[in-house]
Amino acid sequence: MPSTVNKLIRQYLSVPFEKAKRQGLIRFNPVTATDPEQADSAQRDTFSPEQVSRLVSSADDRDWAGAIILAWGCGDRLQDIANLKWSSLDLQYAILSFRDRKGHLNHRGLAPGFHRLDRQRVRPRRS
Image (tube, helix red, strand yellow):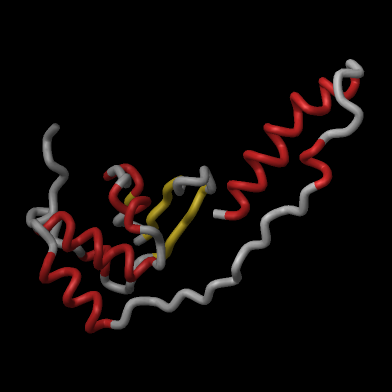
């Protein structure tokens, strides 16, 4: 969150103050007199298998249960997994390719044997 705050305040708010300073309307840019917000370096742990099991058990349907398991297995955010398209999945080479919410291209190797997924049981839904 602090990086977002720093970007919004220091970058975007600073622009009009710099313009006002150049036009002689103010003597200094007040944004430059502030220190950037410091980010906490919070340590995040991964979910344990027991926690994942509880999450899967409480999922509303099989789609969400599968998304939770895939997110845990890949180490990616659930939101990024939920936004996947079938075209992101290469079953022949067991690779998952997608752009995350920040726009970065990601490639994930899937578990051995994943390419043998029963395609009759897991099919894309028609929209």
